[in-house]
Image (tube, rainbow, N blue to C red; front, side):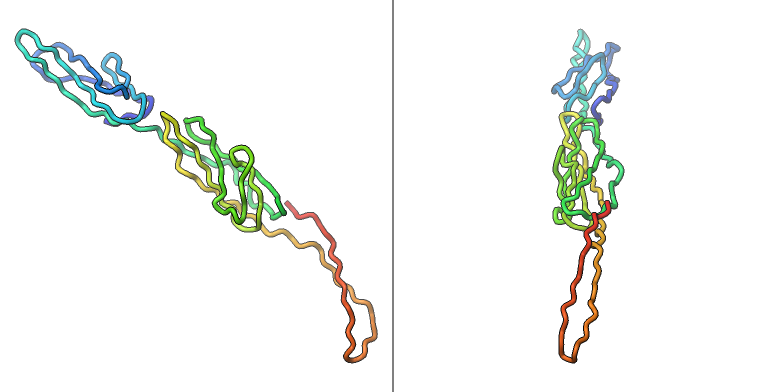
Length: 194
């Protein structure tokens, strides 16, 4: 029998040679037992022993059942994908996710640190390093009642930014064969789009 946190299982006895109900005793304290019900408290396993006491005509009878207990699962769900975003030197955006019942925070890390890095509270602030696909991993730790959540990735596309406006000019010159002239270029800066 396997129980998860919060689950209960009825404990019953059958058989024996007389009709008195068996008394249930626990050999370990992983389960809380009350009125012939087992309630899962912590992970691990235990053995439940049912005992019918001896009387004038019958010897004591016992039977055991093994109970396996396991931690509850947790699932991480990312919020809306913030991408695609446009490259900006040291530009930032945020990611979010919800986790399971352990109530531990969901934490974020970059698996593509050459493209983006994480920081801030629980790593939710992502800093752009270069254009490409930024992959953020979300994790949530477990506790005494919940297992750690499986890591979940989110891919965010970081598009290339547009170049600053570039203009080329030439001044009318009369050149003889073999002469050279310098060409100048002017670059007008524009703020990258977000």
